[in-house]
Structure formats: structure tokens, C-alpha cells
Amino acid sequence: MKDALRLARAGDFGPLVAAIPYFSFLGLAVTTEADGRRLATMKFAEHLVGNPTVPALHGGTLGALLESVALLECIASTESAALPVTITLTVAYLRPGQTRDVFARAHVLKAGRRVTTLHCSAWQDDEATPIATATVHVKLTAG
Image (cartoon, rainbow, N blue to C red; front, side, top):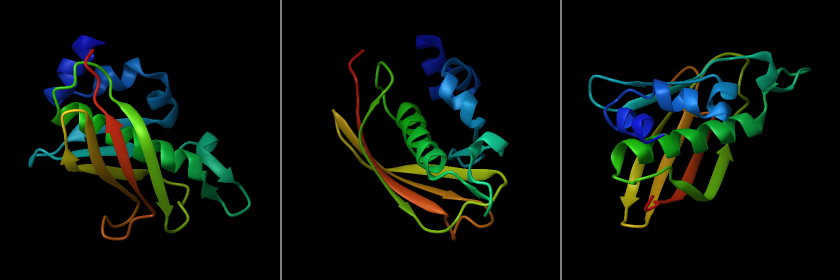
């Protein structure tokens, strides 16, 4: 796991995503863009649908995506020796998630020695029109 954390800090999230089964279940992929920002993609899959009559993505999968992107951003932007731990997650569901890929990004609002606060956003068509947002408080671990 330490090698996967080291690689993630260097911009290669593949080994870390592969090492965490829930990230694979979500179909998560993370890329580092030219400007250094990270972009997560949750690939659409039928098991992510919560209401097949609408159809819409399950809110829990959107919350999981937002929490995951916060943890990954925390790993990439801090020197935490081990995986960070979520303290609180507050999700605002703004509109239904359509049955297609979802993109998400997190940014650090406040980085402390023990606790980091992040804001996350998930969207499908336009980053300026999120389908869900979250505020996440994360505990940094000593390892």
C-alpha cells in the first residue's frame, strides 16, 4: 500500500485505485491534468442505478464518489503516511444523476496537521452545473 500511496502522490493513481476494491466497484479512474488538478471519473454501470424507472444513479454511489475523490485529493496533496479517514461527509444532491459517466473533483479548503477540509463536486455535462456537492472532513493518519 505504501508504494501505491507514493505513486498516487506522483500522479499515478492506478495502483491505489486497483488496491481498493470499492474504487473498482464504482468504476473509478483518476487522471492528473496538465494544470496539476485531479479529475475522477465514475464509469457508468448498471449496478450504480438506484431507480430503474426514472432511471437515475443511486445517491449512495454519488456520495461514495464524492468521498472517494476527497480521500484521493487528500492523499495527493498531503504527506499523510497512511490512508486518511473520513470524519464527516455532508452531501447536497442537486439534480438526478443520469445513466452515464460522472466526473468529480475535490479541492482543499483548509489543510491542518490532523484534519483537512475539502469541497467536492460531481457533474455530468458541465462542471458549473453539478449534480451533487459535498464537504468532507478528513483525519490525517500518522501511519
